[in-house]
Amino acid sequence: MNQPFTQRERVFVSPKLQLQDTGKYGLGLYSTQDLAPGEVLYDEGQVLRKYYTRQEILHQPDSGHFQTFSYVIDTNTYFSGDRSVIEHDITNFMNHACDPNAWFDQDNRMRARRFIPAGSEVTCDYATFETEISFHRGLQCSCGSDQCRGLLTGREYRDRHFQERYQGHLSSYIERLLQGPSWYDDRLYVREGQVGPGVFAMHTIEAGETITCYSGRIVNRAEMEQLPENRQRFNFQVGPDLFQVPLSDTRELPDFINHACQPSAGLADSIRLVALRTIQAEEEITLDYATFNSGVVHGASDNFDCLCASPTCRHQIRSDDFRLPDVERRLFHWYSPYLKELVRSSSARRD
Image 1: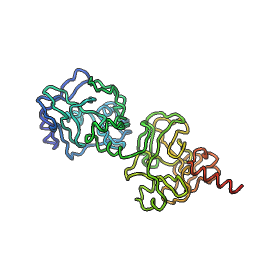
Image 2: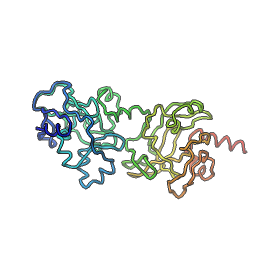
Image 3: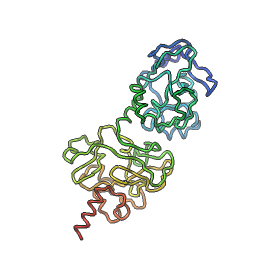
Image 4: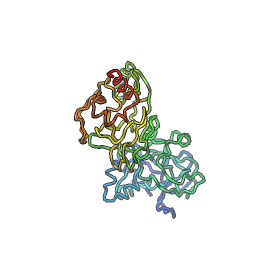
């Protein structure tokens, strides 16, 4: 019985659940009695858990164990633990199924999705809380249901039919991701870097591959200046008095792409960012902000001291750096369409 654990830690775990060998993939969670639709299977409430970053999990002495029992909580944030922590809670052994009989109705509470007869394995769909950064990505599913997807990709939440199927049962982290309109490659993730949070590659990205497509709302400068500072900060100028800004206050993964004077990525057009060369695993995705900034906006994110330490580092970044001869020579091909037009019209006037 697992009740002593639930009382001591103030976590409710149904006494109708027990661990049992699945005969297929190790231990699993099973019902000892019938479970009614909607019946609470476990509720962690506000119990504090220890969380880990991706790098912390990868550098654990028992990293394989930490990866196996991890699940995504937020941007570069995972729950996991050593064997004593995991074995202390039988719900950590709940397996995945593509047509599960249990699901979350809030981040810390699991309910029966339908009637579960005694003796059944209790399962959930990992894709309702796991994303591209999941250590379970690439896992071959053995659920055997008619709806089996075969492989866990971490991209399931992007599918509209998946969203509709699990409406109200996705993690709050995934719900926040779905608020963002921008597209980005599923090999990217956010973690701490040299200058704070940045975007890094989990796997190799080849030169020319599309990394992200920015999206947002187009406003004029007067409208932009009425927005909260954090939405003004992530602007792209697309015309003489037109700027693309985020649709909401939710910060998306592309918003974490930092500046570098010798960038690994560049703008192929107004919204599409591509790799300028092969980007290795764990290398940061960077963009020279001079390739889209015309100098009319003078915020702290447009004028700052650069710490990129590249051979071509300008040390002090200014919002009109696109006019610098060296920057134009090296990066003009990757200027935004508006900046290219600005440079060409300026050259024509001089001629």
